[in-house]
Structure formats: C-alpha cells, structure tokens
Length: 195
Image 1 (cartoon, rainbow, N blue to C red):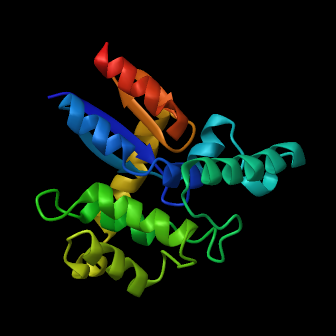
Image 2 (cartoon, one colour; image 1 turned 60 degrees about the vertical axis):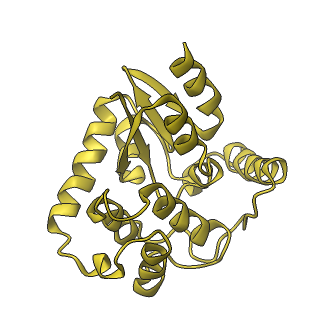
C-alpha cells in the first residue's frame, strides 16, 4: 500500500482549513497516511521561511486576508487572531506521535487540536485541553502523561525528514517524491492519485 507522508504543524491555520479532506482522499484511493508533526519554525529557519510576525507587512496582510477568505468560502469558523497562538506545539505534537494507530482516530486528533486553536480559543499546550482532544478522538487521555523523550526525538526527526523531502510549509503532502504544499493543493493530490 502506498503512503502519503503528511507533514504539518498543529499551529497552522491552513492545516486547519484542510479539514478531513486528506483522510477522505486517502480512503477513496486506498493509500495510507503517515502523520508527521514537525517543528515548523525550525523548518522555516532551514528553508528560507520566516515566522509570520517577521514577514514583510505585505505578506502579513495577505495572510490575514487569505485566512478570512478561506474561512468564509469553506464555512469554517476561525479566529483571525487566536488568543493562544502561537503556543508551544510540542504537547499536542507528542501525543500525535505517541497515539497508537489501532486505538483511536489520528486524523481526528490532529483536527481536534487545530479546531481548538483556531476556532475555540483553547490553548493546545494546556494539559486539560490535550486530554480533551485525545479523548474526543478515541484515545486514552493518559497518553498526555507519556514519557516524551522518544517523542521529542521523533518530532526532530520528522523535521529533518521534512527538509530532506523538500518540505518548507504546513500542510505538505508527499507521495512518490511529489510534493503538494497547502490545503489548496489537495485537488492536485487527488488528481495525481487518480492518474
């Protein structure tokens, strides 16, 4: 079975806007998904990107317009300036890494964190929010209390692997060496899988 390497940050509004489209596309085409949360700020530093606050004002303004447009077009609720953004992405990312595939719904877990951040004004670094997101996706909330040394190593490896796969933003989907950056490239990913 082919696998889509899904690189993402739990802090990305554009990853939030992808919703469950990746999972639906993968299911339709019989491909697996490898969920790879990564350190987006670390990746920016290696690939020529800048954190939003350090970008030229034209880029900052466009980003805000784009977020508003996508929200209105998709009908998805969004807070343009979330109360808890940016926050530490590691607690949420570590649980995605530690969550066993056979227990709950990993795609739903990712979406729970993104929705909490971008639509519900919740801090995804807060232990109680992390546990709520785990439970709502069918996972044992105690995963939040796991030893995270290995998860930290995997998180860093995911970031290095992203760089090796020519990834520079979130979300990015990679299959057969083909890189699809952004939730607005899911149509192209589906076209590629059909082709």
